[in-house]
Image (cartoon, rainbow over all chains, first blue to last red; front, side, top):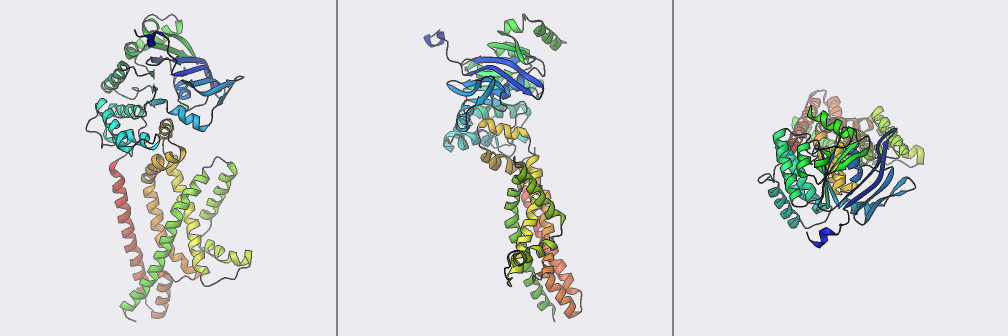
Length: 261
Length: 217
């Protein structure tokens, strides 16, 4: 182990005391989470447990009612006496630069080719030179095993291919952390395997990732830490060998045994 | 009068009809976008006023709107009407009327784009304007094309309404010829002009549709 790894590095993202309600329905009831560089976190749990809402708050698609959120040294949302106050536009834009999100149903832009889906945001949003952005897009296409698909449009691809394009699209922005919202839930087992393989490769390259998933085997393989969410709180967390294989909490055990049925 | 002279006169009228058609499209296609965006504004009074505007434009005859716009400068501001007034009133009435129809078509298209498209764009850091121009609008164009085709074809025929206010477009010419020549032939020729032109409109629409056929969603 090198010296830099021994001193605990600053987290890429820190969320503390997160609360979020939709009307009377409290979906997040005090969630705290910090993700270190290179760490892979898997979030598991029953539907309605707050997993997706947590991800949507982390990616600024929803605003917190209470709690704080920061990306590295950049404070995005600050809790002020139980109410969250968000920073202004330019800083939010800066924060968006730090993370990427892979959606369950891909949300690729259907009218753009694979190449354009991946390179458009780097060119248009990050103002990078076209040649550079396209060269990087080509490298990502190769990495995702999508050679020959550059000029195809999403509707010509399988679900697994589309999901790999959306991973490439997120990676093209060079995020510090990549979020996945049930990335294989819309895929059949064969296509699931090819997407999971890509995510495993990213894990091997020390990409920081937070993955909401129902694939327990995958979570066990890839995650440094597994978080079990239920009822809007983190009910249990720890290494996969503990949370999945030897859960301490009764509700974790109940959830896992339901999955096995 | 021989047929050649008749054709010549009708063709001159047709050119005027085409001017009404072209000016209306050039004005109403972009104005419709503005109206659609106002109709979906976050500010309730803006939404309400825009709804009222659309309701009046769709709910009253275009012919009446032309007269209203023609006479308004005189009755409201006491401005003397000139010979050009009829022409301007016609163009303005057509534009504001068609913008209302176009706006509702645009709105249906914009609201049919899935939320996920906006969310993907937001996470990637696209600004609101960039999202609308580069992500939403191209997809909207494809979705609204059939509905827009209907309106554009209707517009070709609606240009004949300018007859009522006394603009010398093709239908006015045809009616005058029918009376003076005691023959229905001018009407038949005018109908042929409208139809042939609409055939061309259909071809253009088909070509655009084909161009956008490279993807589906």
